[in-house]
Length: 223
Image (cartoon, rainbow, N blue to C red; front, top):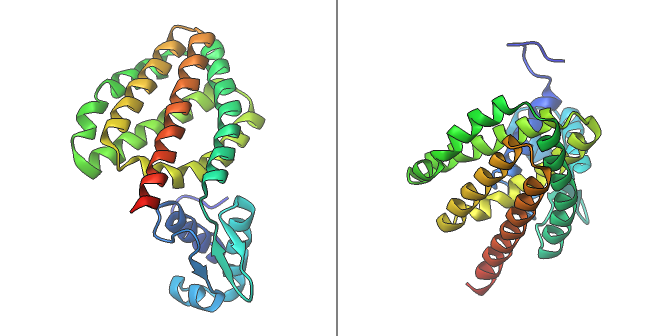
């Protein structure tokens, strides 16, 4: 474990930089990752770069390309639908467990924060970023309430890919506002200790989220 303030190992630094650029869209789907070029750009040797790429392959963010080097994995309609099938199974169960096992205190604090979400979303990119930080905090609270490391580990693997897909929703302010209201309903159900309502609210939220992402992709394909 890297201590506070300690320098990162070269492979860890390369991994974090490449992963961040992929999740933020700076390295787009299909972008080539040539070993020598990336090592020089990041400022590491080829060995730690290979170690970083191996981890990205395990994350499902990078694949080998025909010929030489690697490339960022594509985001297709099929892969998104498959990811949401898995997300639905994992997240609905996690929310159900959270509503059963929760300590209400952190969710009461989150509720106060989510009430301000409409105002945040009126603040442009900075507000949208803060809104996504709130979602991260909600996910952390759910993970803590679930008390199941296997379920939480599976969810975190799914969220790695969802981070790429989330960027599509930023184009739709109406969907972001609707999603904020859906999150508030989920939080209320958890606070109330109602697993059935929490699961139902999550199911609706994920369904609407998938429809929004697929609509954004269709819109792009028509341009």
